[in-house]
Image 1 (cartoon, rainbow, N blue to C red):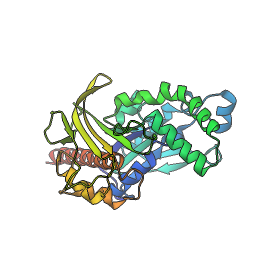
Image 2 (image 1 turned 90 degrees about the vertical axis):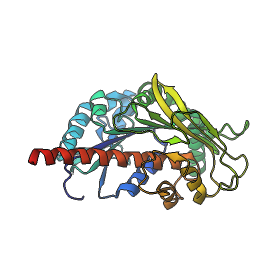
Image 3 (image 1 turned 180 degrees about the vertical axis):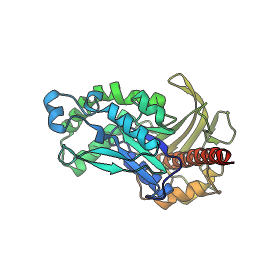
Image 4 (image 1 turned 60 degrees about the vertical axis):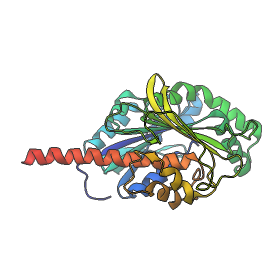
Amino acid sequence: MTSKPDRVVLIGVAGDSGCGKSTFLRRLTDLFGSEFVTVICLDDYHCLDRKQRKETGITALDPRANNFDLMYEQIKALKNGQTINKPIYNHETGMIDPPELVHPNHIIVVEGLHPLYDERVRSLLDFSVYLDISDEVKIAWKIQRDMAERGHRYEDVLAAINARRPDFSAYIEPQREFADVVIQVLPTQLLKEEKAGKILRVRLIQRLGVEGFEPAYLFDEGSTIDWIPCGLKLTCSYPGIRMHYGPDAYYGHPVSVLEVDGEFENLEQVIYIESHMSKTATKYHGELTHLVLQHREYPGSNNGTGLFQVLTGLKMRATYERLTAKEARIAATANA
């Protein structure tokens, strides 16, 4: 870890398993540096091990399987600059292992199923994102992964998804309402008959009225824009790319929405799209494109998923810089 931080910035990353949290966290680590960021998986706050959950019929998605009191106390302690003795949930054995020391760091990312579920934990976060994969895409991805890579039967995969659905709908999905940013992954609208999960329509839903947060926009802030960027400066294969920007409402809250439907054929040309976007929180022209290109092998780099994950990371960096600068000003005033 780097030098002890004057201000710990807390970031929440919420979403179901298999929704892209791991890729997003890799992008954050690339952006900030591994020494600067500590990631806490909230699975570590399971109070029921795998055997107990099976015996009681309580899933890991159910709040009763998690110790929110301890979660809140320890995350609050980290934010206050204190070291904690964090429990460990062992995903291989399904058991709860002996705890480990976790020291405060410049950025603490709390990720998992429930970062935004408990109001006390939610109030500690400085920035939050929910990764929202539609049912159609989630099923397609899970079938591909579990059947192709793990040898599972189609019927078993669907049964596992359906068994998980009630608790997901009750406890995980409602957290979308509280996120500063939602990255929503949907089937394409470019083709009427397209195999779900192959070509994606990705929406960046940015909440308005969040202190210090300036939503990114396309062309003209506050307008409604539909844009087909394909042409001399952006090469597109069939069925092309369509972008949208405009105001909307989400859970009754005013939001600003950016959307990319389709795939980028040449990632170097993403700079053409970047040049028409504003308030991206980049430090130089082309930084957004550079960061996408840096790990073009990451899943989603050739569509809106990668673009919006990087953009959200840049917004998190801006939040960190704003909060730490404010802390430095307060300290300077106090010492004057």
